[in-house]
Image (cartoon, rainbow, N blue to C red; front, side, top):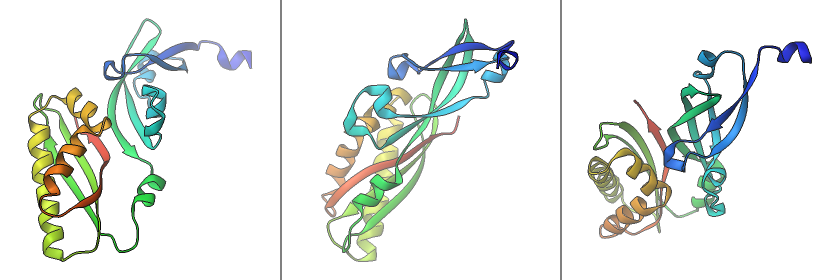
Length: 184
């Protein structure tokens, strides 16, 4: 065992400033350049301490290595499949969207949303609601900086605003950003 650890050092893994830059773990590293290839998935509850968001998995990638620390950057998040499966019921309509957009500070994002209506409805209404969701999300994201977009999605503020506007066309029972990917 001692021979295997020879030349390796423990590095602290530090969360992005977006999550208050706290230490979220440790990693055994032989070469700091190799540490830059690391990525990890962390439960949002571990990052924020909010147990009501147990279903969100945060994706982090190594950004830089300094003084025995690996600084991570936010690479996206995703809702767990079992949580999404709970939302879908009989006699409801599932409205999925995939929005490619850019923030005010030129970060390209892919946002995947899931809307659940109260009852099944016509295809024309479904497409109108889907189009409205896409337009609203794109408009709101383009007006905000990257950190603000992530914070508002994780706090459900953005979803509440979009749902409020979409409910004028057709009522949604639930609306969730099920996945967020950062392209650059």
